Length: 110
Image (cartoon, rainbow, N blue to C red; front, side):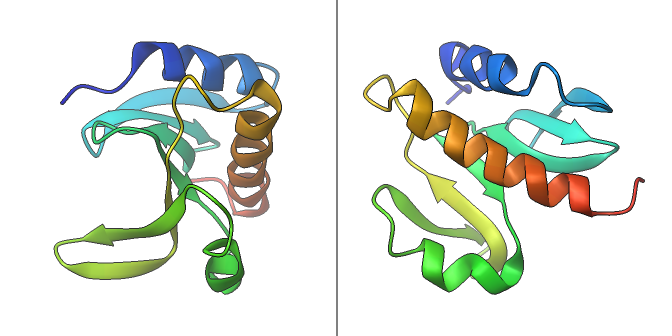
């Protein structure tokens, strides 16, 4: 499954003013990076792949549409899947994208 172009455009709109922004195809989707650190991706499996502060993973799992990202059968702290489709409001999407952006900005540049 290819990533959702419309979702990628919505993410791009939220992130357009971020310093050090770049885009790269990764994990079967289109990743948005800040200074080389991934913030969020329009996932090839649908929705968002979101990078967050690892210590916040558990509390964020209580939110609607969210589940832990799993790679090769292993759940990863600091990585979430967020079901984002056309029914997600712009404000909801921006809140998630900005969370990923803030975490990526807190990391040293690559």
